[in-house]
Image (tube, rainbow, N blue to C red; front, side):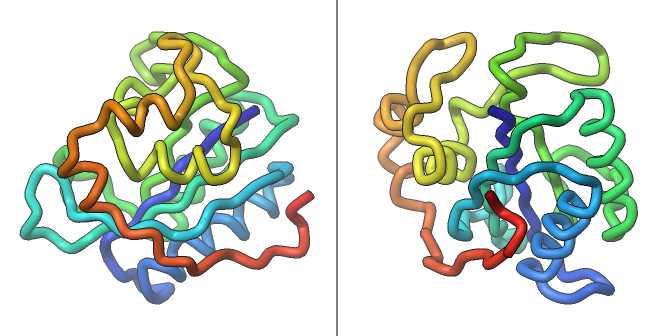
Length: 172
């Protein structure tokens, strides 16, 4: 299974943080990504600077896609929505991360799989637990619930599930 995490903490020319994520999902579908699950939206403070706008994130699972094509598709979508690469952790209109690609382990200049900080991020783990509770971290061999239980108490309480979800007819 392919797991992506989409996040936004800035409005764009396309609309709100929610709109940015919805547009990204629409563009992923247009690129023929077979999405099989989408989580609710989650809101978290910006990290490490909590004074920056809050992030909303969503997790999605997909299948049957080539890794190199996915990387190119993600870059094109981020550009199309208006992402400008700036300093690490700066606010952004859209951020699409590959969390896991069919359990593949890769460490190159351009891509590390699984995502190197996935097991430490509440906004990654909670959506995965929601849409794929049997998922296991490819290196740590631990499931999302185990990894959530190992987060700090602060990290576990500073995330809010918004109970707002995405309705897409193409999700199979």
